[in-house]
Length: 454
Image (cartoon, rainbow, N blue to C red; front, side):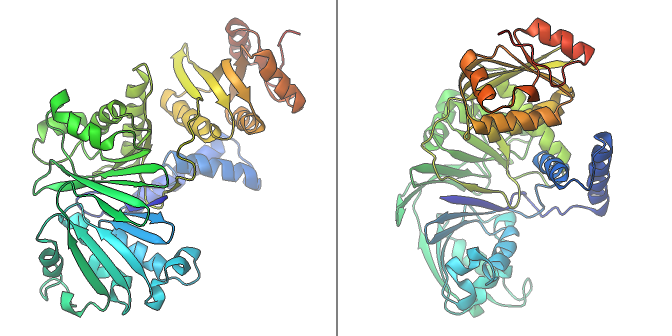
């Protein structure tokens, strides 16, 4: 199962202004200067670029309104037709791309399944501009719970709004009116729906296929947060690999703007944790929120969850172009991290197996934590590591290059032996205990120093 976001904004498209683009370029140049980056070093430039994209300073969540695709083998599912669907259409009409050749909409041989959560403007406004819709031979099965969907889609293409009438669409449209809670089977996928609290009613979809679960829950308000009121949603979201959640408001705004039909990241974090969700993607971003403000929401949500003990979901920001392949969703990594800051030093404990399935989690967490805590001194406590692979060593080497002062402490003998076998002991500052590491960091004498006792 392959998930892709084509539009993540709510309410109305919100393209970047020229001054915001200028701000991002300026930040990137300043960051390169601060690091004394050699701009002729392609690896160093790519490393910096990846970091800037990761924290949205060199990228953006995008300005298009809601549109999501899920690929199931040779079946294409589309959820909502906000302005993001126009770019999806452009991608499907490009015969040079593997994605377009897979579905062949440009030849009039395409077949897709289009689902609507509801018909507010930001969820339907892109449909008239969806080029594959106008190609003879293409077929679209349109699934909806609201009875008025066919008339509403036709209504936005009346002459006073759009030059081409709905009746002149060249592709074949097949409408299917689902009941609330009805189970739908498409090939090997099972799709369920449930009502969300939203003006005019909106619906969440739960897609189960390839041993994975994706829940799309945009445009929902959780006015009452007691167990009885949230149990319905926790049951519907239960054990999802990915929960796409409406995080348009802050908690304060969600309390003030009651009955507007939207929620917040912190409320989503609580519900996702109670539902045993693995990953929550913040979605339906407020059009007035900048990339920096959205990143701050992400950091605050992660910090909030870190205050709680036990398993918590990973939190991410949904942004245009983000693609997620659920190739092995049943794999459960025991790798975990915990962090705290004392006297301008960030301590991070690493536990479990530090291998290929853990390195992206480690890299992302480290970058976000450094930005959040504004420190360049890091101590990694490694007593809890059960295994270290070459992928883990590579991630540590990259971290050592990107952190001003990095120390490794409490390393088990078998883990140290792996670093020896890799011939990389001289890459790291390794200490027996925290006190030794603190002295070295404070004296800034940690670079490429190995103090591990023999």
